[in-house]
Length: 319
Image: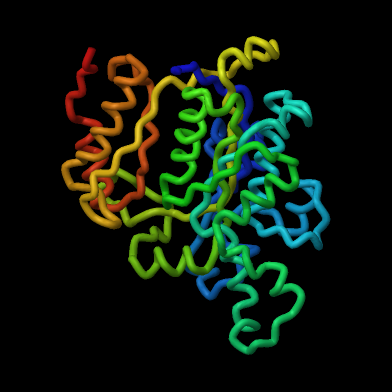
């Protein structure tokens, strides 16, 4: 079986907007969300700026439509807001949502909340707040909470592959649909800023104190941020049966593992080149038909060299 897969809905919340409309307006007006941290309590607040969603956890609870004492992690709240917008965008009924599958991606999950109560763990002075967030460090916990809030019971999975997590969730969902194992999948990812993430990248010395400048001579590294984005994927016959208008078709994707290094790409860009070639081959389109490439763009020497060479390598589509 090789069914066609269509995108019928999408939702997003980031530092530049609380929904799709606001994000689009910010991108159009070239507005950024790179500012001083307001809601994450860190010693680096004054010297490391990030792209933080400008809402408190209490405000996110109200936006997500859940009580602020329900022990949702910030990652889960961001995810729930974006998922609900994607569902509304696709025009799905409650029954259709419950019959859908959910694949959600994250790297740190709810480790932000564990950090908050870590001292309690050390002193054994465990309170109700700590116990409520005890299992949130498990990346899969946020997916279960999303499914619980939306009454999704068909298929659940969590992807945690660092920077490629959300992209892999889309590929995973599309493969399930193409092979007849699912009719509709809600796929995407959510991530909140945490001390672990900021301290980790800072220790690697790849955080730019100013704006990230990938592929620039004066590159200094990346900018960290938080947010969530999800799309609704549906099989062609499901879209036709519902009468919904598809936003786009997902007709090509690829995932490769060049196994060059645990945290670095090969300098010549072999992995990125192979992934792009496989993606183009699957879609059956030549490189000349591509209008836009969304690079990883970390502003680090290794990544810029690897991606830059991969994008410049001749890449004929094999028929």
